[in-house]
Length: 235
Length: 340
Image (cartoon, rainbow over all chains, first blue to last red; front, side, top):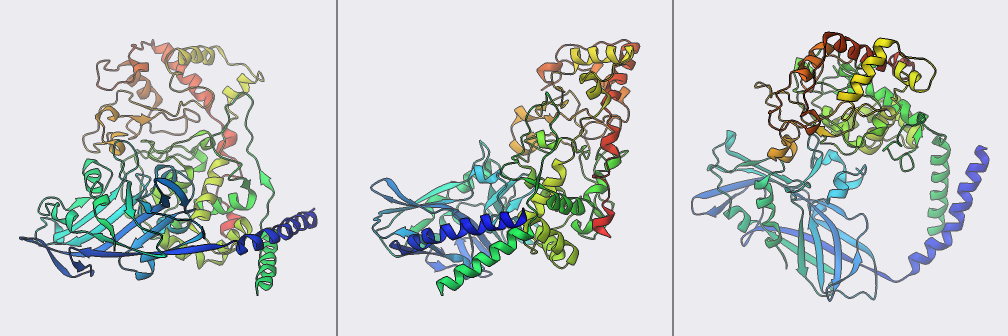
């Protein structure tokens, strides 16, 4: 019985080999995506002071966010979608800031790249916790059952909180507190795309003296997330 | 180079396949029961995975200081509830804010926790593990501990063909064990199958139950798995508003999941905050409802009036939901052979 099962498995694998080789031979290209972060014109350096408004200087210690559902568009139509598209960008880890889109047919042209900032609702309730969706990365709320789409932590003398710390954990997938945001970027057949996130418009809007913590899905989290589409641009 | 890679892959695959015991198991679904919600096709049950889940369920390694296990608050001899404790207890005697529920027939449930926050059983165990008032441990640290344990590496290899334990395999193993906790052999079930008859008291209690209780505690699972407000006033110390904690919507204030009544004899104290110690207190609550209470579920808007005898009869019926076989099932209790 066991031998039959093994033979059956071997047979199915052997049969698949030509398929694998053929698909490898098909012409495909890759596109590398690289994220950078700035505060206005200055590159973001963690644990450094930045002036975000005349009376507010802040220091950022953590910046992490999910990028998912990466798609290429041509003339308003989707021409390519990344499978299992979940990336966790972490400003502390330069490796996480680059990923490569693979197996893109060579002849595909595109003029737009879209991605979601956050994790979609179906994934939030699925059993899949593999890859970057593993709760070990600290981007998951257990009691709320859901992913934290975006995490920004740091401190500012202006914050009226213990140790002057702020922590914005932005997530939520249930109506009316959906926080996932679609980002649309104009590109043109590039092989390498650098996407910059400028945090300044977001930081300027935060009243740090009283707004220093968002730790759950709520109206404030949604308002916070509404900034995301305006923060990204292609360099 | 490629060929060598392919050959290596085949060898590894064969090894993985032969290492995994792929004989799938099935839970017994009693006749006339609805189909389970659990996806058995995507996640087939296997003995080694159930074993691994069972070992984890009883192992305090899941808590920060290795002092408590899942079984600390979910005792197999009392339908996996925490008898005599109104709310859950954690490490260093920390106290949670909700009554640890009985773990029964979870394969038929699509949402978990008193506020239905969890929509997938595989994500459920993360809640008590990470709650600072319960196990207060991180998944990353648990994986570190488990991957240093020869016992768990062996269990994982048998269950998943990989001795390296991942979050996914850890949580799915626990789900598999929990899925096997099926209680379907109470006196009530025997009566329904025509094997025995209720006595007069039980029969009368059953009629009362069907009149007043069964619209939410729907047979045969004795829950409709819905969120309802049963008229309990909020405890001003715990300040637990149920589902509203998740949605922030006032319409969800004081909504809690309808619990199953199976094995209710063993799962005292009752209600989400364990405020009632006896079934008679529970019945007293339902017969003295404030019908104008905000959010009271429509099913309860009709007054329930019971004579003292009827109350006793109703309790006699509720006791027919006890399943002694479930509570003393040798496949459910502490797995000495896995944890020695």
